[in-house]
Length: 140
Image 1 (cartoon, rainbow, N blue to C red):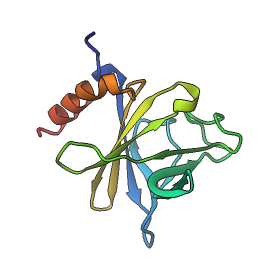
Image 2 (cartoon, rainbow, N blue to C red; image 1 turned 45 degrees about the vertical axis):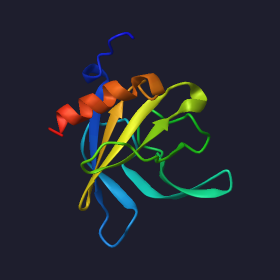
Image 3 (cartoon, one colour; image 1 turned 30 degrees about the vertical axis):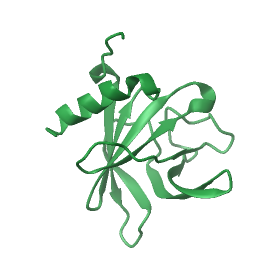
């Protein structure tokens, strides 16, 4: 198996829960122009089944890595369980339909949501390398 440089493909974004809501988060810090400034972690419909997921839309003035992939400038991904202890809620992949395979790992602490982004590492063969990097990052 080839050695993957996970660190060079890593960036993080922190969002904060909008006061008075349970699912709406606003960008607080981290890498800019990747995801929209406002995201929602909520139930999304996948094949007529509700699953936990990320939904977001870029505004007309926002720039972002995934803007323009969909006609309405929206992005979404299901959130699947991840087998790491700590505060990790799960992971999602953007955007398999376009063969991008960017991995998002969601870490929740109180009203903050940190998204660990791994560019092009959303395929199964990179899972162990990403988990090892996350454990090292969080001393787990």
